[in-house]
Amino acid sequence: MNIPKIPIGEWVEAIELWLETNAEPVFDAIKLLIGVTVNTLADAFNYLPPLLVIVIFTFIAFWIGRYRIAVFTLLGLLLVLNLGYWEHTMETLALVLTASFISIIIGVPLGILCAANDKARNVVTPILDFMQTMPAFVYLLPAVAFFSLGVVPGVVASVIFSVPPTIRLTNLGIRQVPADLVEAANAFGSTPMQKLYKVQLPIAVPTIMAGINQTIMLSLSMVVIASMIGAQGVGADVFKAVTQARTGVGFEAGLAVVVLAIILDRMTQNLVKKNKKG
Image (cartoon, rainbow, N blue to C red):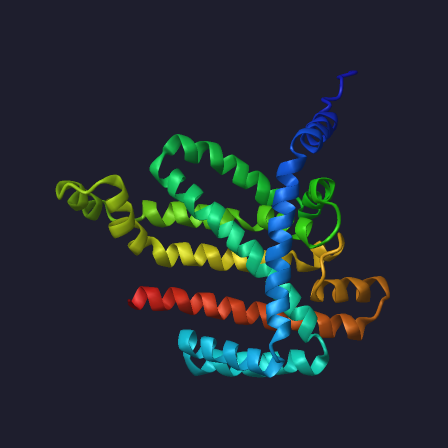
């Protein structure tokens, strides 16, 4: 049977060309905003003496998770400094924080919308499924087309790849709020905004934080992939080591990523525990 091929690829490229032609000012503004944010954070982290930054992060870790995570943060960051990957690790941290912040800004409101409206949830859920199952490398193609090479397309690809957990768990957390509490809020004449901010969100915070934790981890997992399109940081060192078959250098750079991932993971997890206790 000669069944004509559905020209999905041609449709996608036509849409991409139309966006490049008609939405260039929007992409330029996004590129400028993201680029300034990432570079400002990276410059701030690298401007301060490394030992001072390590002390600051150690105190933050102690405040959030007490001595165990604080000790790991101190030793882990000292190891990164000793291996010579401090500057690149701070660039990676700036990229991850920017991507995570954008994901939270987009994800939490969308999650709230999905929790409040079943029709919105039914529309958004398949899109999230698509975003999470599409190979991450595919996101690099339109990101490069719209934003050229550099750190900005890396951040954009990271946002697309990592935002679904925040949306899903924000929706889940609000929907899991006990119905009797919502009914009590309604009985006292609460407006929808009062009910959201004073009842639903405070109870849903641990679940929302779990989603943010997953978003940060997924952003960090895109570091090496983003280095393929010019994003700086430890990912570029890992990618270079792979292309040159330098196992030792790749292991050292990968170790810096692991240290950063564990620190961010433990901090966000302990924030969830603090909220549950509160």
